Structure formats: C-alpha cells, structure tokens
Image (cartoon, rainbow, N blue to C red; front, side, top):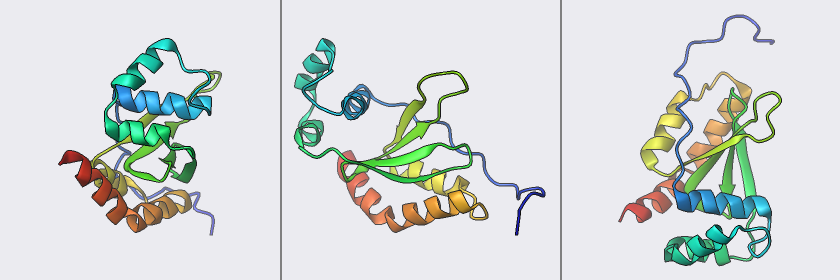
Length: 148
C-alpha cells in the first residue's frame, strides 16, 4: 500500500564522513576516469607520497564503481574497485549546484551506525540495509585489516 501517512520515527542519518587527502585523490581519479589524464600536478606529486595501500588500488587497471543503494536523502552508496575498506557516499547536488559532495565511511563503527539509522520500512533503505548486512563480513575484514 501507499505509505503517505506519517512515517515511523527512526534515527537521523549520520553526517557525511570527512575524507582524508588520500581518499579525495582516489575520488578525483575515479572522476577523471583515467589515472594518466586530467590529474593536477599536485595530485601527481601526492600520488608519489601515498602509501602502498592506496598505490596498489590506483595502479589497478579496472577501477569500477558499484552502486550499493540509496537512502531517504537520495545519498548514493558506492563500492569502488571491489574495495571493502571504504564505503563511499555521494550526496546529491543541491538545486542549481553542479556537483554533489562525497564522503567515505572507513570504520566498522561508522557502517554499524549507518545500518542502525536505515529505515527497514522504506523500500530504498531496506534494500541498502540488506546489501550492507550481506557485505558486513567483507567490510569488517577489510576495515579491521587497515587498523592493524
């Protein structure tokens, strides 16, 4: 049935997580679609300084993005290059603004808080929640590995 009446009260979505410089660079690389073309000079310099963990990802030939789902605020959740150490979130651009914002979740706690905030009654969020739950052991393995 149509759920036009009052929606159940649920936790507010967590704020957009702040990205590190390395994560910003990863994202710019994804956006320019090619690692060789379109990177600014300071990005190239920074790429040299990045640790091995990022370098391995950046050198990977296939950099595909998998959409995992959306939440009620129309934020889209992405997995990049099959890498479970980060869950990327793309916030839509506001009316009249060209680009949306990006953030990224990189801890098991952040993913858990996001899962808690998702509303199982909404079609969009319940399917996102299912995807996150199905992948939770992958996220945990990848994210715990980073802290070590």
